[in-house]
Length: 262
Image (cartoon, rainbow, N blue to C red; front, side, top):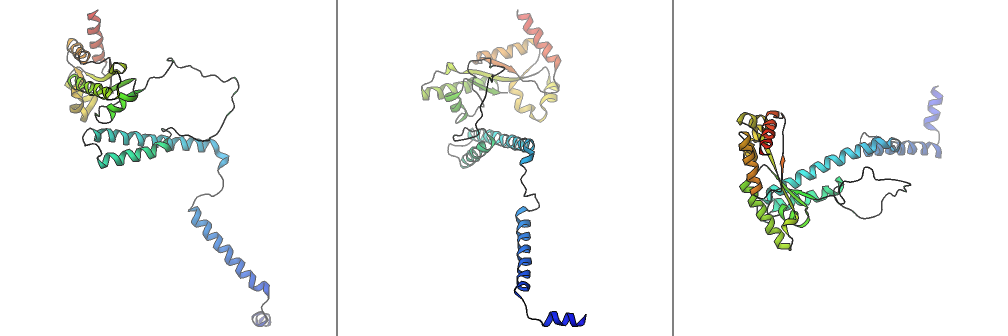
């Protein structure tokens, strides 16, 4: 045995004995690169789980769409407070535009997957010949300009009749800037309903003070009078925005008061 070990140490190296270590070293390098690239994930194709991929992409798109909506709401809020060209507003607008493409909320052009349909039907069919475009918000510098240019309807929540009248006046000014008749836009307001202070606090909690100007309160006649003030302010449509816990007593009070009018 000792002679065999001595022969192995003293015999002349062959080409094969030099290649084997190199092959082993190359394999080790490949394993290391594969581990670094994978970072613990499976590099094999997952195309066999197409429904799972679709569900995951749908979830990601939904999350991105929520982020886009949040950013645009923040832009609207800042637009009402800051001067045009404000850096923060510009940054949020840019970020929202970038996310909108990934979220599927922005129109794109270019080749895509094509389908061939046979005897396909659009069921159920839309009620309207053309779906109306509604714009919601009260930002005077941007939101109302967007509404003036594109909207068939404009909606704003939880503001007083006086503020509603002011915002509608601004909308008319924005329409005048582009030569549009403001009468083409249906103006709506969302209002809350709380017959007393306790009901207001139960529904809105920490938001009670902020929403109070746009909440109908009091007796049946007082609620009807509140609706009348919105009509006088120019509301074409008044939406009753209920929040849990739903106040059935308030609805019954309102229904009785409206019934007495007839």
